[in-house]
Length: 362
Ligand SMILES: Cc1ncc(COP(=O)(O)O)c(C=O)c1O
Image (cartoon, rainbow, N blue to C red; front, side, top):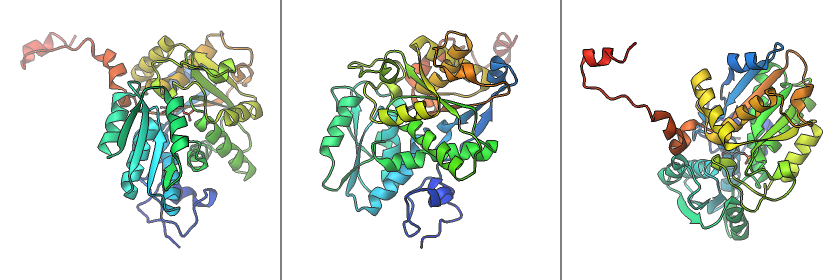
């Protein structure tokens, strides 16, 4: 039996009994998870009616996105199964996480990315961790199809079509319940390939079945208007949004998302790119939390619902006074320096003199 070392407080060390990882198996871990649930006073007062809004800041994982939770389990299982290498298609964050955990495990990692549609920080991460990076002339859905066709022969797929990824990712819901003492009333998160909404719902329902939570949240998935297959109920052939992490036209876990939305009496909403970018700036400047564009979609979605122009199915209209609302910020703002570059347009430059400095201090 493997003793999880006292210095390993990662997802497997903390939740092994709830994960498909036997006690004899050594975890491939970077101490992921345990991310802060940050109270947001300004979002709370925007919602009003005594609501409390919290942000699950998943950008503070080891590779700066929520993907690390699933990847620790997927790579641990791949190593246990004797995989010679791992492969994934990615809008960027999966590749960063896969590359890091494969490096940790000492096995090669191949990542397939939609050419020209990857945020610079994520691409740099994949290279830094030593992955073989292959750009596909197509979108994420094309890359995932290729990955699925290539699997076998010792090559393990570590996309969220791998159920071990969902298992690891569900631990974010465990942590939220442990911090709040119960599940929230409403959980808002960006929806791309739909693995994360599937995972959160699994986590919430499992903990409720174990008596760790008394209620279940309504799930509200947010898609970018130009990449909203679940919202429109059809595959989008050419998805387009500045939020590259959710630029997906045919989600692999569509069924999981549909189940989470149906069973939780939730809904899916869309936000325009300008709403996403405005929400990214607002969150950084008003709450000190820097989110990548896909993650800011959660905040944009909440704001849209508050404005009263929400869809008829919106669970927000049905939540009670003093509701507890959680938003997942799935990835760190530094992941996408090109989009964030617009924040530095008013750079002030001076000579190193106090007189010069004082001109700018009023
Ligand atoms: C930052 C970020 N947010 C949201 C998502 C969407 O998650 P899912 O594809 O599990 O729906 C992704 C997926 O890559 C992501 O990287």
